[in-house]
Length: 300
Image (cartoon, rainbow, N blue to C red; front, side):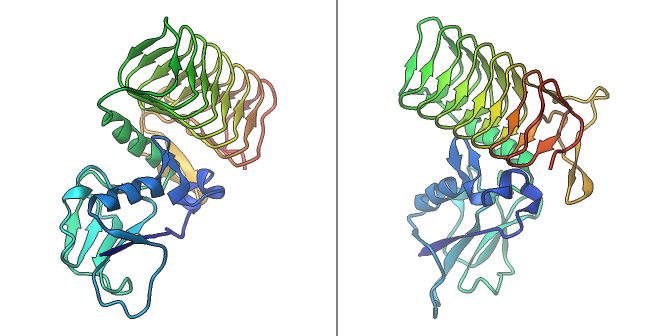
């Protein structure tokens, strides 16, 4: 049986992260969504193909590239036509002979959902990291580091003295972490990243080739690739009234469903030293802030 990963065409809701990539190239747990979907397809021993072929009369699995398929996807019966949905009735894909004719039968995958907004990546990232059951240490760990949790540490990555890790963490290849950093659960750091002296990161995604300057705090945030955050950059993630955050998407103020939400930075963003962010603010790719700037609104 063949399987095809389809591009979810409307990437506007995922901006600024999807300004420079499809949903399938967004990373959770330091792997792209496409890589994770491919791995789960292989659990069913299916043949992943690149594009539709003509005159197909056999059942075929179609999955959108913005789908987080969850842990129960492996239990799906692939032998019958069906629409695959989340509990929220989001369409994740289908099993059919013709993508233009959707099956009437529906199967709900309990822990699956569509990733539409940047903060949806945080939800998927946390679920993936929570499922890590043991350490995988391919890099080096200084003697006086503390690890309270399960971590995946990529090749040629170094945890310098004084690094304290609490909870499950993924760190990619060729990273330099520390000294004296505090990494908290739900955090994924991509390849070739630098996390400087006395930085705290909590429940965040840092994509590849990015640098978080010393004395900075990043909480409940999504940081794109090739980002440089100047020393002393602080992201706020909690409203004073404790209510859920709202964010402007396609010129509409929408409810994020998150009580804690920090900053969303697109690729190639640079922040000046001592920069501060109001909660749930976003910066588009290539934008920059001045030293000491307070970001109160999205920067496009």
